[in-house]
Structure formats: C-alpha cells, structure tokens
Image 1 (cartoon, rainbow, N blue to C red):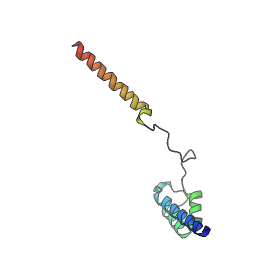
Image 2: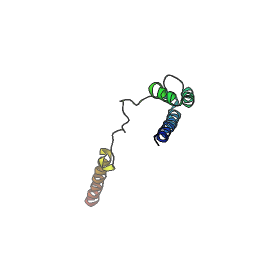
Image 3: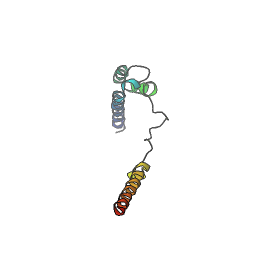
Image 4: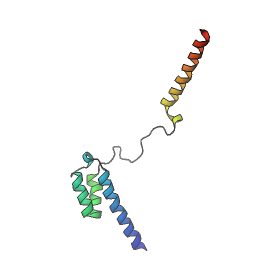
Length: 101
C-alpha cells in the first residue's frame, strides 16, 4: 500500500512539474530557455523537476504565494462605497433642483 502511495505521489509531482513549466510565460524561465526546461523535466522526472524549482522557476516577488490583498466584497471596496455616496448625493441634488424650479 505504501508503495502505491509513493508511486502516485511521484506521478503527481511529475505531472505538476510538466504543467508548471508549460504554463510559465516564455520570458520568465530562468537559467535556460523554456523548451529546454520542459525537455529536462520530461527526461529526468524528479531531478529535472527539482532543478526547475530551484534554478528555473521565477518565484513571485515578496517571497510568497499569497493572493493580492484587496476588497473581498463590493461593500469592502472604498471606490464602490464612494460611488454609492456620489450617486445618492447626485439624486438628492437633482431632487432639490427639481423642487426649487
């Protein structure tokens, strides 16, 4: 059973490495051209993948994989709230102008 789990883990890593190299934009591969990295990962499954992670992959600046911080919902977005306030103010001013005329 342990052997099956290890084989599945190795196959999953192999597929991950291939997809990661394939999805990396052309200009972001370091050290070698992207096509050479893909060839290395395919021909040397675990070694090529480890080399890709260490030498070829361009890691995000800031050192993390965290998602960019920003509003999660519209009511958390200051621009959205400002637009709502502006709309309310505009309607109020239109009503005043309509009543005053």
